[in-house]
Length: 139
Image 1 (cartoon, rainbow, N blue to C red):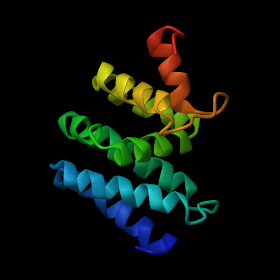
Image 2: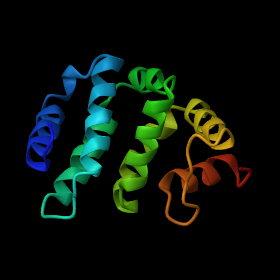
Image 3: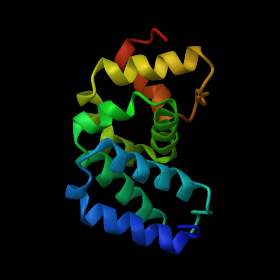
């Protein structure tokens, strides 16, 4: 979709049919959609719906499928940007899912940080806070 309203429709459709997100290619497409939606001018009355849809999609995605996404730099970058887009109260909802990914998520993001493939805002990034918390402040 190339406009906000179509993107919101698709996200809510995906959210309500999340059982269809069985494979990594499906979830990869959805993460690309979510990432593109963030660039469309989301400061409107749909913002709360966008936060909720993002959280539900991540929460109900299969852990194995999320592990597969960690293999592609572009998908890790999309995931980090989506995570950092969320306000803290919504980020708290997906933190248990990130914990299920275990050290795989932590190591992958740390690798991308050291390789300068991603850059995190030290003050505002949910991902940065999560890494500091999980690694015991040893970034």
